Figure (tube, rainbow, N blue to C red):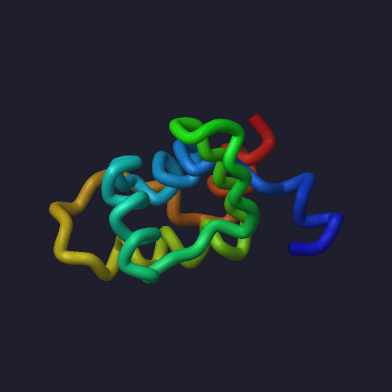
Length: 87
């Protein structure tokens, strides 16, 4: 992740929201190696901060659209992803 990407990185919860998946599904995908956060920092044994860059969020959106999960409304356009990241 480059320094400029740090300004556009979003939390795992927000990344899951943009991809229209549950945070639990995102964590499962992390455990199975389907996706990897760009930044992962352990604050305490029970608190780990995970950040995703915008290119990684686009990958999450693509993965969620191709998964067998029931379809849910998703922010799939780049403009929608950028709007969520700007919040």
